[in-house]
Image (cartoon, rainbow, N blue to C red):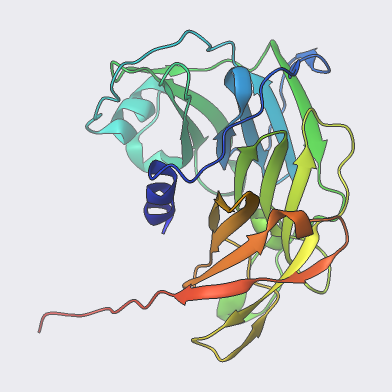
Length: 280
Protein backbone atom coordinates (compact mmCIF):
# COMPACT_ATOMS: atom_id res chain seq x y z
CA UNK A 1 0.00 0.00 0.00
CA UNK A 2 2.80 2.42 0.92
CA UNK A 3 4.58 1.66 -2.35
CA UNK A 4 1.41 2.34 -4.33
CA UNK A 5 0.92 5.71 -2.65
CA UNK A 6 4.57 6.64 -3.29
CA UNK A 7 3.93 6.02 -6.98
CA UNK A 8 1.41 8.85 -6.86
CA UNK A 9 4.14 11.11 -5.51
CA UNK A 10 6.42 10.01 -8.31
CA UNK A 11 3.82 11.12 -10.83
CA UNK A 12 4.26 14.68 -9.61
CA UNK A 13 0.99 15.12 -7.73
CA UNK A 14 2.65 16.21 -4.48
CA UNK A 15 2.72 19.93 -3.81
CA UNK A 16 5.98 21.86 -3.22
CA UNK A 17 6.81 23.65 -0.01
CA UNK A 18 6.45 27.41 0.08
CA UNK A 19 9.82 29.20 0.25
CA UNK A 20 10.91 32.37 1.99
CA UNK A 21 10.22 31.49 5.63
CA UNK A 22 12.77 31.20 8.43
CA UNK A 23 11.83 27.65 9.27
CA UNK A 24 14.29 27.15 12.15
CA UNK A 25 13.93 30.53 13.88
CA UNK A 26 11.87 29.18 16.80
CA UNK A 27 13.88 26.01 17.31
CA UNK A 28 15.98 25.41 20.40
CA UNK A 29 19.30 23.61 20.57
CA UNK A 30 19.70 20.56 22.75
CA UNK A 31 19.19 16.82 23.01
CA UNK A 32 16.14 15.23 21.42
CA UNK A 33 14.45 12.70 23.70
CA UNK A 34 12.44 10.05 21.84
CA UNK A 35 10.34 7.18 23.16
CA UNK A 36 9.89 5.83 19.61
CA UNK A 37 10.66 6.90 16.04
CA UNK A 38 8.69 6.67 12.82
CA UNK A 39 6.91 7.67 10.58
CA UNK A 40 9.33 10.16 9.00
CA UNK A 41 8.92 13.03 6.51
CA UNK A 42 11.13 15.82 5.18
CA UNK A 43 10.18 19.47 5.05
CA UNK A 44 12.14 22.48 3.76
CA UNK A 45 15.84 23.16 4.40
CA UNK A 46 16.65 19.59 5.41
CA UNK A 47 14.21 19.59 8.33
CA UNK A 48 13.24 16.05 9.27
CA UNK A 49 9.93 15.41 11.04
CA UNK A 50 10.01 12.39 13.36
CA UNK A 51 6.78 10.94 14.72
CA UNK A 52 7.15 9.69 18.29
CA UNK A 53 4.01 7.55 18.53
CA UNK A 54 4.57 6.46 22.15
CA UNK A 55 4.75 10.10 23.23
CA UNK A 56 2.04 11.16 20.71
CA UNK A 57 4.36 13.93 19.52
CA UNK A 58 6.19 15.19 16.45
CA UNK A 59 9.80 16.39 16.61
CA UNK A 60 11.18 18.63 13.85
CA UNK A 61 14.97 18.32 13.58
CA UNK A 62 17.24 20.62 11.56
CA UNK A 63 19.57 17.96 10.16
CA UNK A 64 21.95 20.45 8.52
CA UNK A 65 22.01 18.02 5.59
CA UNK A 66 21.51 20.72 2.98
CA UNK A 67 24.30 20.21 0.43
CA UNK A 68 22.55 19.70 -2.93
CA UNK A 69 23.22 16.45 -4.74
CA UNK A 70 22.07 14.93 -7.99
CA UNK A 71 23.44 11.49 -7.14
CA UNK A 72 21.27 8.53 -7.94
CA UNK A 73 19.99 6.48 -5.03
CA UNK A 74 22.02 3.33 -4.49
CA UNK A 75 20.42 -0.07 -4.03
CA UNK A 76 21.73 -1.35 -0.72
CA UNK A 77 21.78 -5.12 -0.30
CA UNK A 78 21.29 -6.50 3.20
CA UNK A 79 20.52 -3.13 4.77
CA UNK A 80 19.15 -4.78 7.92
CA UNK A 81 22.44 -6.63 8.49
CA UNK A 82 24.46 -3.47 7.84
CA UNK A 83 22.37 -1.41 10.26
CA UNK A 84 22.53 -4.16 12.87
CA UNK A 85 26.32 -4.32 12.55
CA UNK A 86 26.54 -0.55 12.95
CA UNK A 87 24.52 -0.78 16.16
CA UNK A 88 26.40 -3.78 17.50
CA UNK A 89 23.32 -5.97 17.26
CA UNK A 90 21.89 -8.74 15.09
CA UNK A 91 19.41 -8.38 12.25
CA UNK A 92 16.65 -10.13 14.17
CA UNK A 93 16.99 -7.57 16.97
CA UNK A 94 16.31 -4.46 14.90
CA UNK A 95 13.22 -3.16 13.14
CA UNK A 96 13.24 -0.52 10.39
CA UNK A 97 10.05 1.40 11.10
CA UNK A 98 10.13 3.95 8.25
CA UNK A 99 12.37 5.78 5.80
CA UNK A 100 12.47 9.20 4.16
CA UNK A 101 14.74 10.56 1.43
CA UNK A 102 16.17 14.06 1.87
CA UNK A 103 15.16 15.80 -1.40
CA UNK A 104 18.22 18.09 -1.18
CA UNK A 105 21.09 15.71 -0.42
CA UNK A 106 19.38 12.50 -1.63
CA UNK A 107 20.53 10.79 1.59
CA UNK A 108 18.06 8.30 3.07
CA UNK A 109 17.05 8.42 6.73
CA UNK A 110 15.83 5.34 8.59
CA UNK A 111 13.82 5.21 11.81
CA UNK A 112 15.12 2.08 13.54
CA UNK A 113 14.10 0.27 16.72
CA UNK A 114 17.08 -1.42 18.40
CA UNK A 115 15.65 -4.34 20.33
CA UNK A 116 12.10 -5.67 20.34
CA UNK A 117 9.08 -5.00 22.52
CA UNK A 118 8.55 -2.28 25.11
CA UNK A 119 12.27 -1.84 25.81
CA UNK A 120 13.26 -1.09 22.20
CA UNK A 121 15.44 2.01 21.72
CA UNK A 122 14.69 4.41 18.83
CA UNK A 123 17.68 5.23 16.61
CA UNK A 124 18.05 7.46 13.56
CA UNK A 125 20.27 6.15 10.75
CA UNK A 126 21.43 8.01 7.64
CA UNK A 127 22.29 6.01 4.52
CA UNK A 128 24.45 8.08 2.19
CA UNK A 129 24.08 7.94 -1.57
CA UNK A 130 27.07 5.57 -1.68
CA UNK A 131 25.05 3.07 0.38
CA UNK A 132 26.98 3.42 3.64
CA UNK A 133 24.87 3.75 6.83
CA UNK A 134 25.87 5.98 9.74
CA UNK A 135 24.36 6.82 13.11
CA UNK A 136 22.76 10.28 13.38
CA UNK A 137 23.40 11.85 16.78
CA UNK A 138 20.48 13.76 18.30
CA UNK A 139 22.46 14.89 21.37
CA UNK A 140 22.98 18.47 20.20
CA UNK A 141 20.69 19.61 17.39
CA UNK A 142 18.22 22.38 16.67
CA UNK A 143 14.69 21.08 17.08
CA UNK A 144 11.10 21.88 17.98
CA UNK A 145 8.35 19.67 19.33
CA UNK A 146 4.57 19.45 18.97
CA UNK A 147 2.46 17.25 21.24
CA UNK A 148 -1.00 16.00 20.27
CA UNK A 149 -3.56 17.19 22.84
CA UNK A 150 -6.13 14.44 22.22
CA UNK A 151 -3.98 11.33 21.91
CA UNK A 152 -5.50 7.91 22.65
CA UNK A 153 -4.74 6.07 25.87
CA UNK A 154 -1.32 4.47 26.26
CA UNK A 155 -2.18 0.95 27.36
CA UNK A 156 -3.57 -2.36 26.19
CA UNK A 157 -7.31 -2.42 25.47
CA UNK A 158 -9.60 -5.16 24.21
CA UNK A 159 -9.80 -8.85 25.00
CA UNK A 160 -8.42 -12.09 23.64
CA UNK A 161 -6.85 -11.86 20.19
CA UNK A 162 -8.17 -8.34 19.63
CA UNK A 163 -5.96 -6.64 22.21
CA UNK A 164 -4.06 -3.55 21.08
CA UNK A 165 -2.46 -0.36 22.32
CA UNK A 166 -4.19 2.55 20.55
CA UNK A 167 -1.31 4.91 21.40
CA UNK A 168 0.82 3.04 18.85
CA UNK A 169 -1.56 4.39 16.17
CA UNK A 170 -1.68 7.97 17.43
CA UNK A 171 0.41 8.82 14.34
CA UNK A 172 0.27 6.50 11.33
CA UNK A 173 1.64 8.76 8.57
CA UNK A 174 2.91 12.32 8.10
CA UNK A 175 3.74 14.64 5.19
CA UNK A 176 4.80 18.27 4.85
CA UNK A 177 2.77 20.55 2.59
CA UNK A 178 3.54 24.25 2.00
CA UNK A 179 3.56 25.49 5.62
CA UNK A 180 1.74 22.65 7.38
CA UNK A 181 2.53 19.22 8.69
CA UNK A 182 -0.24 16.79 7.80
CA UNK A 183 -0.78 14.00 10.33
CA UNK A 184 -2.97 10.90 10.23
CA UNK A 185 -3.74 8.65 13.19
CA UNK A 186 -6.10 8.03 16.09
CA UNK A 187 -7.40 10.34 18.80
CA UNK A 188 -9.32 9.77 22.04
CA UNK A 189 -12.56 11.06 20.47
CA UNK A 190 -15.62 8.90 19.72
CA UNK A 191 -14.79 9.29 16.02
CA UNK A 192 -11.20 8.14 16.64
CA UNK A 193 -9.88 8.28 13.05
CA UNK A 194 -8.23 11.68 12.78
CA UNK A 195 -6.46 13.97 10.33
CA UNK A 196 -4.58 17.14 11.28
CA UNK A 197 -3.05 20.08 9.44
CA UNK A 198 -0.61 21.61 11.95
CA UNK A 199 1.00 24.96 11.01
CA UNK A 200 4.80 24.96 10.96
CA UNK A 201 6.89 26.38 12.63
CA UNK A 202 5.01 24.82 15.55
CA UNK A 203 3.09 27.16 17.84
CA UNK A 204 0.06 25.37 19.25
CA UNK A 205 -1.60 22.12 18.21
CA UNK A 206 -5.40 21.92 18.26
CA UNK A 207 -7.55 18.81 18.38
CA UNK A 208 -7.68 16.76 15.22
CA UNK A 209 -10.40 16.57 12.60
CA UNK A 210 -12.49 13.42 13.06
CA UNK A 211 -13.04 11.62 9.77
CA UNK A 212 -15.74 9.22 8.63
CA UNK A 213 -15.62 7.10 5.48
CA UNK A 214 -17.90 4.65 3.73
CA UNK A 215 -16.29 1.22 3.56
CA UNK A 216 -17.80 -0.53 0.57
CA UNK A 217 -16.44 -4.00 1.40
CA UNK A 218 -18.11 -3.85 4.82
CA UNK A 219 -21.18 -1.96 3.62
CA UNK A 220 -21.05 0.58 6.44
CA UNK A 221 -19.51 3.85 7.60
CA UNK A 222 -16.22 3.63 9.49
CA UNK A 223 -14.95 6.07 12.13
CA UNK A 224 -12.34 4.16 14.13
CA UNK A 225 -9.84 2.77 11.60
CA UNK A 226 -6.93 5.16 11.00
CA UNK A 227 -5.59 6.30 7.64
CA UNK A 228 -2.48 4.21 7.00
CA UNK A 229 -0.80 6.37 4.38
CA UNK A 230 -1.67 9.37 2.21
CA UNK A 231 -0.37 11.80 -0.40
CA UNK A 232 -1.42 15.40 -1.13
CA UNK A 233 -2.66 16.30 -4.62
CA UNK A 234 -4.63 19.05 -6.35
CA UNK A 235 -8.02 19.13 -8.01
CA UNK A 236 -7.88 22.36 -9.96
CA UNK A 237 -6.23 24.70 -7.49
CA UNK A 238 -7.68 23.07 -4.37
CA UNK A 239 -5.39 20.79 -2.34
CA UNK A 240 -6.74 17.40 -1.25
CA UNK A 241 -5.46 14.26 0.40
CA UNK A 242 -5.63 10.81 -1.18
CA UNK A 243 -5.77 8.48 1.82
CA UNK A 244 -5.47 4.69 1.99
CA UNK A 245 -6.75 2.36 4.70
CA UNK A 246 -5.53 -1.11 5.67
CA UNK A 247 -8.77 -2.77 4.60
CA UNK A 248 -8.37 -1.15 1.19
CA UNK A 249 -10.57 1.92 0.60
CA UNK A 250 -8.99 4.93 -1.17
CA UNK A 251 -10.60 8.13 0.12
CA UNK A 252 -10.41 11.78 -0.89
CA UNK A 253 -10.41 14.64 1.67
CA UNK A 254 -10.31 18.40 0.89
CA UNK A 255 -7.60 20.04 3.00
CA UNK A 256 -9.83 23.06 3.53
CA UNK A 257 -12.04 20.92 5.79
CA UNK A 258 -9.22 19.90 8.16
CA UNK A 259 -10.08 22.16 11.09
CA UNK A 260 -9.56 21.43 14.81
CA UNK A 261 -12.54 19.66 16.36
CA UNK A 262 -14.47 19.32 13.10
CA UNK A 263 -16.10 16.10 11.84
CA UNK A 264 -15.98 15.40 8.12
CA UNK A 265 -16.91 12.63 5.68
CA UNK A 266 -14.38 11.51 3.12
CA UNK A 267 -15.28 10.59 -0.44
CA UNK A 268 -14.56 6.93 -1.15
CA UNK A 269 -13.26 6.83 -4.73
CA UNK A 270 -11.99 3.24 -4.96
CA UNK A 271 -11.92 -0.03 -3.10
CA UNK A 272 -8.83 -2.16 -3.63
CA UNK A 273 -9.56 -5.87 -3.68
CA UNK A 274 -6.89 -8.34 -2.61
CA UNK A 275 -6.91 -12.07 -3.17
CA UNK A 276 -4.84 -14.67 -1.39
CA UNK A 277 -4.17 -17.88 -3.24
CA UNK A 278 -2.41 -21.08 -2.26
CA UNK A 279 -0.70 -23.78 -4.30
CA UNK A 280 -1.94 -27.23 -3.40
